[in-house]
Image (cartoon, rainbow, N blue to C red; front, side, top):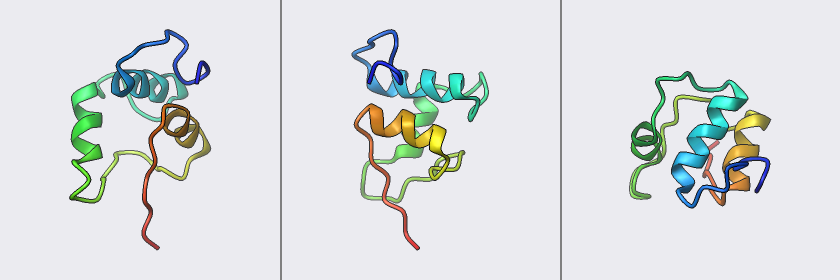
Length: 72
């Protein structure tokens, strides 16, 4: 958790965005709102602007308690 959230933010979506930026998988323009919109409400499949299978992305998301369903 501390690796993905070194600032120990209680705002997990912002912590995820910070981690993804630090990992270099999103640019500096990517915001918390972008992350929340991509995540969807659960009723719609998530459409992230990055590869959820990337190990860097998985570290950020999994460490913060996010899971992503991947259809094959």
